[in-house]
Image 1: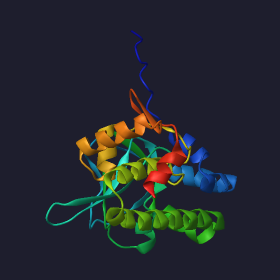
Image 2: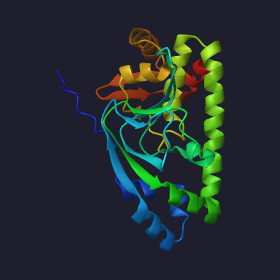
Image 3: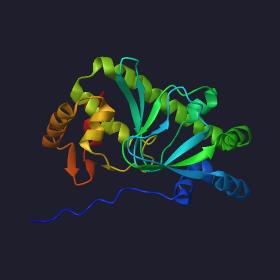
Length: 234
């Protein structure tokens, strides 16, 4: 019997993340040096919060390792998952731009590490660096488009479509800048992102595998036919 090799979990250093981020590479050398000196790193254990509803946010975040979900929880305990952030992505700009308390929870679905750009640095970049503002504009536009689709999905799509949409979302350039098709994502985490039960998610994944859309491997899910998943997710 062939033993499956363990999949290495994607992980970036601060310098690697910044070096592949277009907003950072377009800065001049002195500005890059100053920003790099002000960026810090934070570890978040599985199940822990990076930001609670109602809190003031003091950093802009970049994913170095792990997986973090956005969610909103009602007073009766019901939860809606808005999406997930994977390695290489940047998030949290909306709350900083609004200068208002958080309206969602940021929860680590596995042990994670994030880069933290201080609010003062974030605001300085917005005021003095046009390329940074262009990056933010594209981010906000893409996120708005995705969230609008998510609202429609909750009312219009069946459970297979919700699972497909969660998978497509994890390949979206906003959440997965490297475009990795091998997602370091368990089926339990996928069910959490799709806001369906684990059993429902497993049944959908079996149908996707039978149709040649995905393959499951030790440590993750491989997207084989993105166009096929996109068709189901619409």
